[in-house]
Structure formats: structure tokens, C-alpha cells
Length: 162
Image (cartoon, rainbow, N blue to C red; front, side):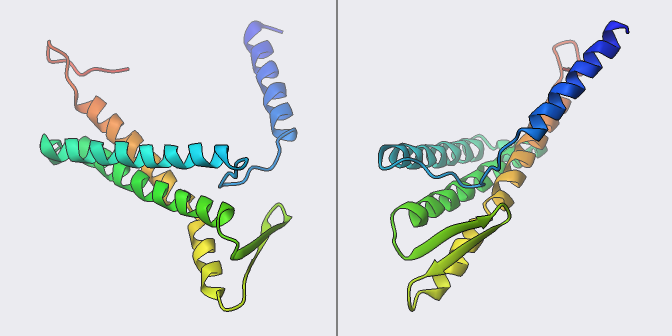
């Protein structure tokens, strides 16, 4: 067996082992009370401020006229919305006692609200779909950086390639 086949076999066995031993992962994390949640919520606020600063900086320097920077600006706005969404879910999960959330199985949870607060269950469910903001934000960030790299030229006029 040559070294390439040996490496491929090792990679395949390792990947298979990792996939078979994986545990379920929940989209929105909960944290230990109260310090973990406070620090995590502060991180969301810091990320919102950072993305807002990036958006402001891009507008001030008129960089959003370029295609790549426009994608990065869109990414920053989506990250702001995602952080607001995630912070709201953490708040509903940890601070308000108006929802009863129980995990039924890997694919199902039960969300029960207190009497007269049925609409909050729908809001909570929609907020739990935070990946609908985060994934496009990451895509636009990647695509913006890729576009900027493609359009960047070196000093001698040749395109820069990674």
C-alpha cells in the first residue's frame, strides 16, 4: 500500500469515527447561570457594536461602491440582525418564565406558554431560526472577501492569487 492510499484510509477511518461518535448539537446554546449568560450576552453586544462600526467605516470611506465591500457591508448588517436575534432567544430562554421548553427528541421540542401568552411561542419559534440570518451573513462575508481578492492587483499589474 503506497503512502497516498495509507493517508486516504487513515482519513476515511478517522472521519467515519468522528461522524459515528457525534452528539446532537443545538442551534442556540444555553449557559450556566448567571456568569456564562452575562458574558455571552456582552459578547453579542460587542459583536453588534463591531459590525455597526464596520458598516459606518465602509460608508464613511465610500467603499460600498465597490462590489466586494458592498457584500461585506451586507454581511455586517446580517450579523447585527443575527446577534439581536440570538440575544433575544437567550433572554427568552434564561430570564423570562413565560415559556416552558422541553426537548422531546433530537428533532422536536415542545414550547408551552403561560395562559394568555400564546403569541410569544410563535415569536420564540421564529427567533430560533437564527441560522436564516447567520448562514447568509457568512456567505456574503466569504463572497465579499473573495471578490476583493480577485480584484486586487499587485504592484506589477498581475492579479494576486492565493
